[in-house]
Length: 239
Image (cartoon, rainbow, N blue to C red; front, top):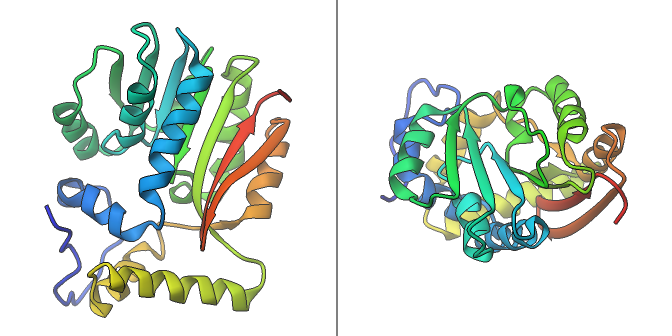
């Protein structure tokens, strides 16, 4: 379904939520909202699938409708790998279960801050940290690092900002122009921006990289950047 959540003027704009309305249009919403999403997801899946080997376990934390989970499974044909998709939005989990049917995949309705990932070879946080309270981010990453396998790999994609305010403004304005080029009206762009103001808090690349190191991860590789979106490969120990 086409995303028209913010197409009509709203007198009072409530905070953005991953409810049933958003779940119903999410594939269209994210494709038209995140530059390079159609590269980010399959590449994340490929990187994860290669690291899993023949029998590893991956956790897709904040999995939404399971696009990254599905990408991992497509890229690794082994019947013995396991992917666990976790999300705290019931509507997302319910819909994901109807869309994806693979015995190697399970979904959980759960707050990722409570999810244990003992022995995981891969943990994915795809556009997720930005929706957590900033004070919860380092404790989450630290715990994940303590529970993952010694050769564990963390794959993170995030919307980022820039320390240079002029460049930050340029990225924002260009991103909004890109969304309008994808069919969103100025009203839709404006109303969604308002809805996200209290929900999505973004960091600079430098903040992300320092946080990974503070959490105990040893090596960080930024493999993707498009305007104000970035993806990282984070090794628990130096490969």
